[in-house]
Length: 113
Image 1 (cartoon, rainbow, N blue to C red):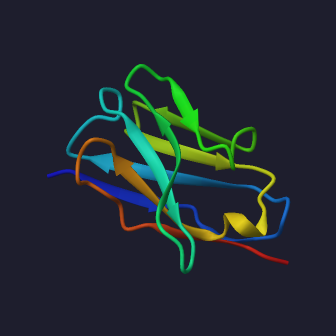
Image 2 (cartoon, rainbow, N blue to C red):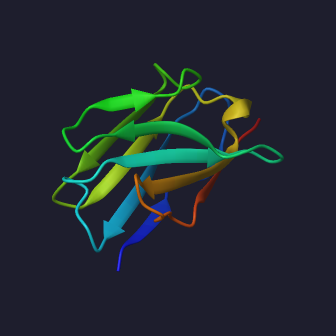
């Protein structure tokens, strides 16, 4: 059974950084495209970034240049490095095995002074 478990969220001041982790079990991140999504209060869930099986990355315009998605095949983990955080980045962040119905439970990121 595939499971995705996110961690690394928390409270950070504007301009700060956080690194989210998504530990995957039941399949390998090295052969699957993985994505990060977020859902802010009162808004729909939106795609933030993804990494393909070949290692190519894609980003939403709102985070391009500030966020970096990566993976560690040995740890079967996908990361989202978030820099220069803004209050509008506040959301629950979810990891997803793309082209499947598998989601993590989410981790809350709050950007506030």
